[in-house]
Length: 280
Ligand code: ADP
Ligand code: MG
Image 1 (cartoon, rainbow, N blue to C red):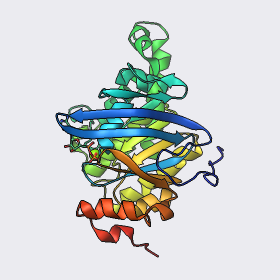
Image 2: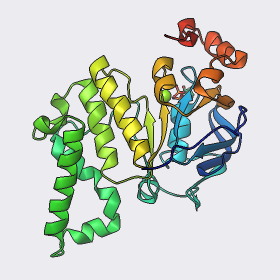
Image 3: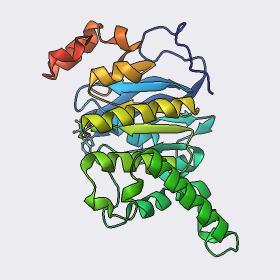
Image 4: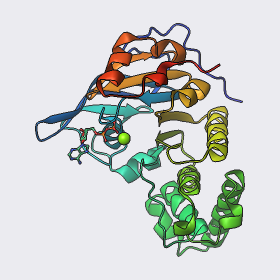
């Protein structure tokens, strides 16, 4: 069992240092034409935590994920993951370093079966060696290992009965689960989930929340984007708020919602004010 980190001595302020950060970003800037999508001075994610990244639509959350995971390149600044410089790394290299992400719009390959999608997720593990492994006598045992791991994850995510179905035949929620299960095939040390609960029905949402909490228990660090504050409060150890590309607040999930700058950011974006009410 991994010890859940304490944020007791961490101040509630944007860019605050954490006792043991697994991921840091400094001076990260990305603009599209005249629009500054991301402008983050300093950011740290505490190892073994579940950190929520919230903010109104267009705040720059997905772009920030893209920059951190090598799917896009910052014009300025850089990041460090587990002691490694992220600048210049491709998305595949980032994944091999142990940080994987899912997308706001799922990227499950619809013309492949569920189990084939899962096997693809294992590629990060072997890296370039994976191709070489295909022709080696070791491959058979490796393939067996991958299949076992895939079936174990599919069982956990209640998709095992669908393993030979095309991913395209799954519901939106099941595709979200498949994407998360596939990300775990590479045995990551950190996962970044972009709106994992969006479009998922309430029953599946519950199991997704459980899976995220289980991941933390297994020592995986989780950073996730979510709009539903009830979900955020239930599972997050720490909340980071973005608006107009910047980090405007950080803190304990209950405390951060009371921050007036956070409320203004949402109200300015015509968001539902009920977001801030505590549900009993
Ligand atoms: P969020 O995920 O917080 O909703 P995004 O990161 O998707 O926000 O977008 C931040 C801003 O950057 C938005 O104004 C969006 O329109 C813009 N943006 C994102 N990606 C691109 C792109 N590839 N080209 C142009 N503008 C983009
Ligand atoms: Mg987004």
